[in-house]
Image (cartoon, rainbow, N blue to C red; front, side):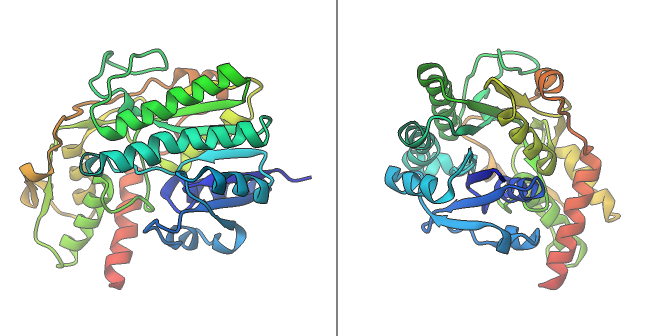
Length: 323
């Protein structure tokens, strides 16, 4: 009998790649879709799987709809990927971010506790919880110091997952994922902003690329690699929390250089630093230590950053070219 999975946030980058991965494993895949969301099905269509998943109306802020989604999907595994996940927006909409990203995760945990505690649960935690870093490389034991309403909300969700695991014996795990990108990334995120900007400049549709702190360093990987780690966590006998990262950091400046060089341009000629894009509280560097994931899950990142950026630039060249 095939296993069944319910994915919140299935129309997002991670949700689409995870759905594709689980379908390849023979799962029946359902996705909870909030009708207030502006997301469309373009990512599922891009991967050619829109007709292979079942979409169920539901919202993280509505416990009853989550309970109905659990019943309708007959899920053995639940992956909570839905969130208000753009850091900049979290300062403009802090209450919404807290309710959806923080309390929303608690609603899913509570729904599972009520409906069926044997369901395995994955929480999408984030490296933004480390914020003002307390160690040069961050692992599962590094203290958290979030620097945005988004990071604070994710920390609430993370500790709620730990609490339900310890209080109710639930198989609840968190993946503390560092930055992971792809051609399916939202245009508001810096990597897609860069690769889309490169495509527009190369094709004569833009003359500059305006960015914030280009000296910020991030640990960037490919989202398609990272969803495998989510699945592996729920296959373990015991639930736990894992840092998922490449272990390598790169500046936004260097990432721009790679992207522009791929189309034969020099980044310095087109990148403009705009103070309007600086964060109220900056996170200067994030670098994960994925040793635990490698040793216990057998997982490691496979896609080098150069290959990832080339993949994204090529996809945006095709998109912008069709406009």
